[in-house]
Image 1 (cartoon, helix red, strand yellow):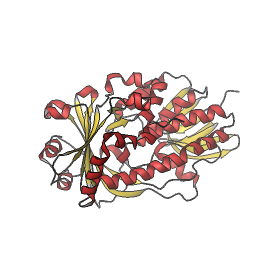
Image 2: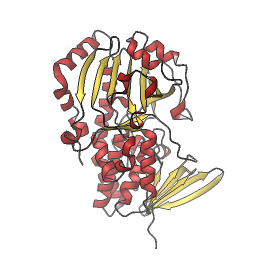
Image 3: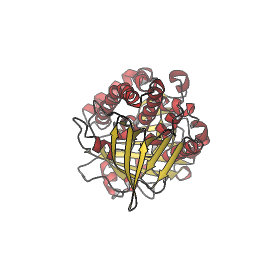
Image 4: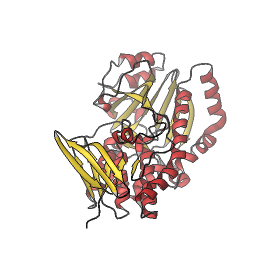
Length: 397
């Protein structure tokens, strides 16, 4: 009798990474994705060493090729006058943390993951199939799904919910203490601008972080330096549910310009460059103590969504996949493997969720707290500021 596959709900970064990692252990994988096509959407993404080491091991980095860029440094600036508060060198990232620090477009990473999955005969991806329920026992899972108006059933050895912040799998698990996503009262705005349309200084291969009252701005080159990715996050009281087109919501960019009205003219040169800004709402969710029940578990944002202030959302999904790989290789019993995986991940991801929230508060400080923050950065210096990131970037299971 042919072995039943491990079923994964969701073909985003978490789902495709988990599929690759699990297939490396010799197991069959079936990925069910509700979208009818894997659209190349989203913004730039920072791939810190704790993620890139696994992508390299899975032969994904080589597929990214020139689409990924190694930034020289993170340059932290003050929004109101453009003053440089700190410059954190990244050129020796591989020596320091054992893997490169990269930036790439999310679509390029998704394409590289899809190419790696397509070359793995143990993985099957079914598009346009939405998981609608499941029943699990000690022998396996039966997953109910919908393909348009057609109802389907898939039998599997286990189920991994990698279906994002609004996870259907998580909701149906009814985990103790689980709470629904809460609006973070912040909006993220993104844009891509051809480098040729910007002043030359913005083409430098650095990650630039501008800090201001109730807002911050990040920008860095992408796509081999041909364009600049910009993401601004501003606090507001706008409150609505997740849009159907998550990455491509639209709001009046005048809202963003008002939030950054007192910023330096160089920042405004950036903000005025895009022909169009896309926006999405930020949501938060408290950590879970447990996210596995027998042969069902969660990964990525379904398990531990985190605010983007440490740029660790995708990296933690990739870490999840690596932990699943280790746990399932060490346990022939899948339920025991899922429990081992959960135990390896809950404390770390909860710590990162909390640290991301606190980082957002630090980025968005107003005077006089902002002045104290700026002084602390300058007193600490680059060496000690980088050392504060070691627990994130040098993590090895």
